[in-house]
Length: 95
Length: 493
Image (cartoon, rainbow over all chains, first blue to last red; front, top):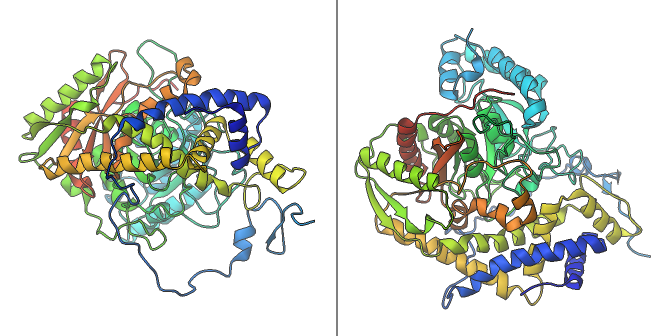
C-alpha cells in the first residue's frame, strides 16, 4: 500500500500537525519508503496467532479504590503556557 | 594528584569509603571536565553544578557519619527523558519548551535515595527517536572517538547519545539512558561503553517521558560491566505508579561478576548474519564465541526464524504507540504554544513548530497505521508477528540456551550528517537491526565493547538473556570484557 499527497494531508490533520504543500509532498515520499519497508510483514503466516497484548505475562495490578493523591492544582497548571486561577486557558471553543 | 574522573564507580566507591577522596572533590573534578569539554562535545543540554555540589556536600556528611548509600557521592548524568523536579526536562524537544516538572521520576529518585549526585541533563534524539543523536533540538553530540588520523566528527549513536558520549569522555561516572529499539546498546557500542537494557518491567517507567510504552525501558550506560551492574541495582524497583513494573526482588547483580561460565549454554543465531555486514563484525563475533568457549561455556547454533521481521514490525508498533503518547503535546498543559485562529489551528501550529522532522514522520506513520481501514492490515499484523518473534526466543530458551551472543550493531560509528542516512530514513533505522528484537520480546540485552575496527573505532557485542536473568548477562559480559580489555577514547577535545 502507498499513500498519495491528499492522504498525507488528511493524516496530518488527524495528527494535528500543520503541513505546507511542500511538507506534504516531501512526507509522501518518506512515508511511502517506510510503508514499502514494512510491507514485508505480509509474507508472514499468522494463521492462528494472537496479537500481542502484553510483552511479559502479567495480571493487571489493581490498587484500592481510594483517593491517595491530589489537591495540587497549582503544581499541575504550573507549566501551562497560559493559566488563570488554576484553570488552563485555551482559545474560545464554543461560540 | 591523579585525575579523579579516571576512577570507575567501583573504584570511586572504595576511595570515598576509605576517605582517600571526598564526594565534593570528585564532583568538582567532573564539573571542571564538563566545563572544558561540553562546548565541543555537546553531551549535556543543561548542567546543574550548584545542585551537584550541594548533593556532594550532603554525601560527604553521610559518608562521615557512616550512613553512606550504595552510590554515595557518585556523580551521574541524567538523560533529558527523565523527569527531574524543578530541572529542565524536555526530551530534547522544542515542544516541551521551558518544562520543569513538579515531580521526580522513580528511577532518578532511586538513584538520589542511594546517594548519587546529579551533574545535569544529557542530550538525546528528540523524544528518543533516532540512532545518531542528530534529531535533538539542541544539536548533535560528537562522539569522543575519531578514526585514526582523521578529524571527521562521528555520531555517538542514539537515542542515548549524550549519555554514551558523556560516559566515554569521562564527563560523568555513569549515566541513565533508555532503550525502545536499541537506544542504550547502539550508542554504548559506538562509544566503547557498556549499556544494558533490562527486562521490560525491571525499572519503573514512571516519570520518564513516554515514547512507545510497551517497548520503553530505562537502563544504565557505564564504563565497565561492574559499574553497569552497580547502577542497575539502584535503578530497578517495583513501583505502584507503574503497573507494568514487576514485583521481583532486585538481585545483587555485582555478585554475578566473576562467576565461571562452565555449564552455560550460549546460542549463536544464524539469522544475525545479515547481507552486507562488514567482515570485521563477523570476525568480532567469532572472536567473542572463542572467548566464551575458552571460558568454559558451550556454544550451540540456534535459529530465530522471524528475526528479519522485527524491524518492520517495530516501525509499526513504535510509531503507533508514539502517535498516541505524543498526542498530549497540544500547547495547553505544558511547553510551547503557537497561537492560531481557533483551537485546532493552535494545536496544528504548535505541533508543526514544536516537533522535529523525525518525530513528525513517526507520528504520521503511527496515525496512518491506526486509522480506520488500516488498523488490521498494519497494526494487528505487526502485533501478531511480535508474538512470533517472542516465541522464537521462548523456544530457544526452552531448549536450554542460557544467553544469546550477537553483534551489537551492523557497523562502527558513522559521520555526523551522513548523506545516505539523511536521504533514506530506513537506512538509519537499520542501525537497530540486532537490538530491536530484544525490545519486541521484552528481554534483557547488554552491549559490551569487544574490540576496535581497522580505523580504531570501537565495536560491541550483544548478549540477550532470559526474562529477568540480567545476572547471566553481567556474568558473561564480564568474561568478554576481561578478554577484550577496556577501550578509552584518546582525548582530542
